[in-house]
Amino acid sequence: MADLETALSLLAERHESLRTKFRRSGPRGIEQEVWASGLIRLEPLEVGGEAEQKAAEVAAGLASQPFDLASDFLWRAVALCQDGKPHHLCLSVHHMAADRVSLGLLHDDLCSLLAGRPFEAAAATPRAVAETQQSKAWAARRATAVEHWRRTLKAAPPPLPPAGPRAAMFSGTLRSAPALHAANALADRLDISLHSVLLAVLCETLAEQTGEERLLIGLMAGNRNDPASRTLVASQNQLVPYLAEVDGKSDFDTFARQVYWKTLLAYRHGSFDVDDVEPLAQKYGRYGNGDGFDYIFNFDQSPAMPAAGGYTSHESEIQVRSDGRDLGYPLYFQTGRSNDLLCCQLSLRKEMDGLSNEGEAQFLQETRVFLDKFRRSLMERGNA
Image (cartoon, helix red, strand yellow):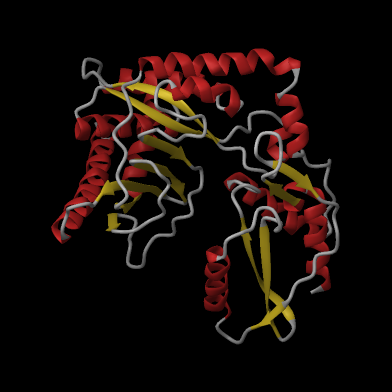
């Protein structure tokens, strides 16, 4: 236990986001406090033979506990022990302290500390990255990011009317090895990224479902394009606007290549000052933090979506349910590859006011149909 506590203490010393609290008392409404490092103490939880099941229960319990941003460090840990020795470590980390890439960095760094392996260099800090992004050297980049927002939002259609107070979430998952094979074949044939193939098919599916030819997509940008940010544990994600124009006049290959190049340009502007973008975005009913976007696309290299029991590699599986985390967007689509599967998660936010159980069944069917159309379109394109 002492070795684990020492490793966690050194981990918090290396990454200042694990030593940060946030108070709503600063000049812009929020103030960041970085505390000195100290020794981490864990309260061991002794478990019996069902360690895996108990670890899952403890992790779920940790995830359900809210953080007080002003008084809590934004992570918690519980060590599950057998015969007094650590067997599992359960961590809950607030998204303000770490994004998905950061979780991988924390895992790797903790393993290095436990193994006694030294680090080649100190990790980047959020404050240092912020100072660079606010420097004179970045002035041109900040200006071009604002211009990208202005140009894109000016050409975009107005936002959809928001769902009312009785909005409900409907979620679906697609797991498919054949679809991944088709997507990879398509990416190879067109000499573009897997990300671009999946986004192009998503845009065509959205256009078919909505009847709209111009679609404003919020792209989730990881913003880890320079060496310093690749060791940074923080929440780097920002949404950058991309306008897809699906007019039906271009063949899919041409459209997909356009998606590839246009999203590369969009991601170049993925790191921006929200305060610079906010006044401009509000003129078009959007916000710099992503509010007001109708469709969100998030490509994840390794999505956390284990296949359900009974699934085989020759099948495609779609599951839908009437729940899910409310992210505030009418449609949120996350996709990526996990081992040999294409994994997609779809969340739809629908207004339930005045609707009966038949309305719920209708939205569940809509979720399933959307994922199936996406899969079939991908298969047709990739196997052509």
